[in-house]
Image 1 (cartoon, one colour):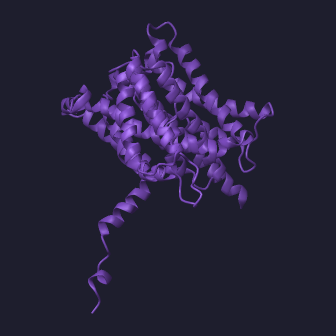
Image 2 (cartoon, one colour):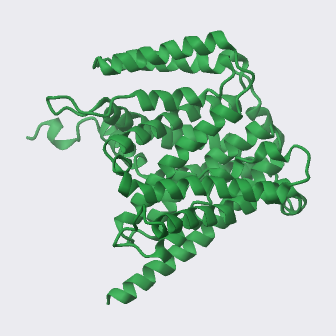
Image 3 (cartoon, rainbow, N blue to C red):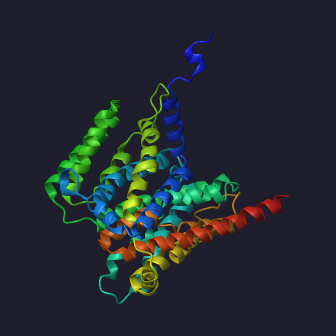
Length: 399
């Protein structure tokens, strides 16, 4: 007779948890969960029970006098930006950004992809009081949605196209968190800010000293987050700085680096919980004809839509083309300009960071959220169509 261990799998819940965590490390699954959270929020906010959605969003639990929405935008997005910081550090040390010649194309594309949308937004919204506060809303690309759409619609495209989009998004994330820190922080209080600097310096020192206990770094990261929040600087800055300070080089014994281990454990939390919860609390706006009509006619919201849909394409594609034309960058031999054009449209998906900046620029202004959702939807559909056409054209040419 066989033993029970041979009949039944050992700890099936553990195996399932591992499979789930592995799935959440892929952009497709994370993007689908975030989309589902967004749809759930929109359905609830447009239902007869919309009042309960707003009440939940504004509930203030626990310390720091933060609502659930504020915990999501300040706290959970710090987890998202921690992962972004790890990606930036990895790219600069081991990835595309470590080689200036290879990195020039996505770097210039990312920078132009932030400048052109801001300029278009300011041009469209000119003459409106307070419009300048929102200049950065259309500058950010949502990497989870963008990579998910690329994976679903264009998995047959060369890996170089995904690498271009990923590198562009890494630079874009670094630019976005810099913009938030510099332009969208509250009045700065020096004492907690200096204390946060000291805690972050200790975090970096212990990484350099190769201290291994993760609980120490978790405690330091949480402490830094609280201090940065109390200083008036947006608390997500603490997340990205911790990511940038985490060591990415493996030990002499070949063991994986702290950044690799942290990414392995934290990315599923970010993709499967932190970002979807933020999307759920941020995306619940009215979508009745009157609200949509206002978004398409008012200068500020129209500036957001044009900045994301048109500005991102012009900036990313124009920056890439100009950098190659001037001779300090090169396009991968597996790619065509039409491939980059399709991905440049995809960069107009501005969901997560655009919503965050929009709330910092215009707190409680639902029309901004609606504009970001409309623009991201338009960019998603256009990019999916263009990528599908490119996949079919490539397949036909290869026959």
